[in-house]
Image 1: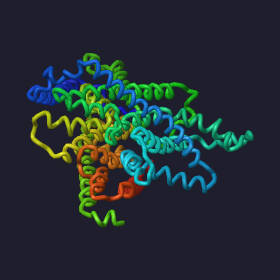
Image 2: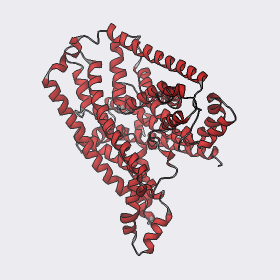
Image 3: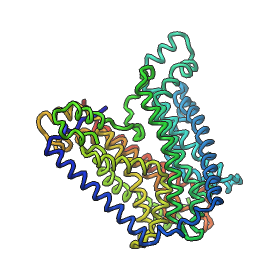
Image 4: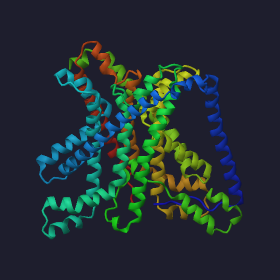
Length: 310
Length: 215
């Protein structure tokens, strides 16, 4: 799935590309300089603004908050995976009285925003006498939403398999459960593993919604820090944001690694999903650059080869 | 039903603000996403790098944190005052732009290599390769995933509720003050979202069928 949109640049194109490159750098630098200037002007770089981060007690609390974020994420991820399997199998059932209600439930859970569901659990349920800790509201809302998304992913994975896979299973005398468990699901999981991990990244990001229903996770702690000495609003956003980005990058890195491994291994090629365009998260890194670099090496215009692959 | 008809003023404001954030954020995301998506396939390595950095950075940041930056951080910089609604539109637009950019890039990558090669073979420059050959084809395969992005955008507007914007996610706290039942209010909010999402999914299917590629 690679498109090669342009030739190896000739002398003119190289010049033009360099000009555009310089223009891009200038625009980005101007933007950063403006932001930096505003930061400087409003005293965001003052030591007093960063003062709170010199205390080890603050960092202990940050790690405590990180622990609560991860606690919510971990349990929600496990429960969402479990629910995803149950709902996926339900939707693939041959019996209409199972399939239809499960389909309706999945579609409903996918359509309701996670935050509204969290509020429903945290603010709504006490009305009928069910008190719920913010932790459980976060975990259950994330479980229900991501579970139904994962169910769709798994179902798409199973349905993208060649029909012969299931038929062969029945032909050697397996029952429906055996066909599912031994033949269809393992292939669907392998094919969909990058998407599943990408959805887990979404789960991790969505734990930050707990902030709004007063679950004391990282972002909630960041909000608390803003009222500390020096009012480090942007500073705590940067520190906490950095932590989120690192955590998500690690998970995304795993997803990318799994995707590359899946693409390389011929054994896992069986269930390449068709029509995967439904999900914007499905698409991995493009390979434009590799091809261009290849062309740059093989092309005639080697005088400018460095500009091809920079 | 009294919950709705007794408080039509608040519901009207909430729904219109939600739609305002949805459309405002959508337009911003489309424009910004187009630029970033173009940068990510451009023949200029630096532009590609900038696009990739932007997408990777923002995509791995929770939307709530982006809101945090804009709503709490922006006023710190001493720039002209903006209402929380405008800041919310900026936050959600900048966040969603990364998804738009990825959808556009993926759409361009679904056009078979031969199309671009043929276009280049007859001597078209990059601009015409894109505008006459690649983009018209990419557009069709982009429509369904783009609608998925907009559905996600619609649901994400609720995050603004945590940042004192009067919209559907926040209406519970206002109606609770008027003594309404929180559970009923939130169920109505959920119903409205399900209806809106169903409307968008219907539009998605309609457009998909309308512009189906005959290859």
